[in-house]
Image (cartoon, rainbow, N blue to C red; front, side, top):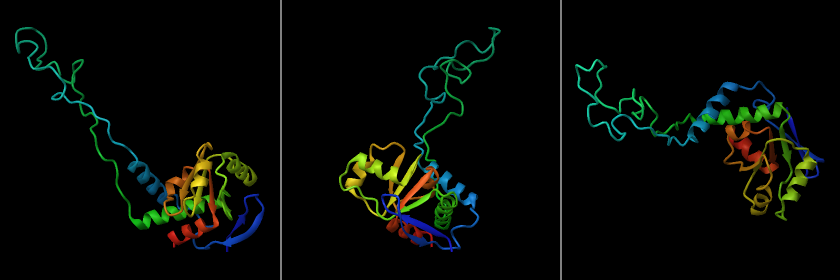
Length: 207
């Protein structure tokens, strides 16, 4: 059965947690992760870009020249998409790009993303991750002791104002609750730093 070491804030091994062998240490199904990540990214799109068609731009009320006799091509409006300052042909309009996938797919994507980090040795479990002082340098010292480098997602079981305050100015560090973490959050970061209680919450979510 696969095991994940649990360390303290000084980086020393404290204990280990057994992970479900059906879910961890096996082949990663990339397709289900891709489905969920694309869905989460699409839901974050604002979709506010807008262009004006020929009926919306100002001007163009008069026919530029006579239909016949000038030797030039037929034109009905100076706001045709063929003209400078004309309307945009098939331009984007405000729309909602959001969609959803089944709950089963979202759970599977969360499970596979955690498995991917576990197989890549990028899943680190810490006994407790709290900074009572609320100071950034104390949080940075913890990350240094844990030898965590690069983009990191810290998954906590709850919200601690002091810990959140201490993490705000640390570059490439994101804090998220275990109940809110998803496959996109996990895969967009190199490392996943999770507390022991938060890991239990995550394991319940992927059962």
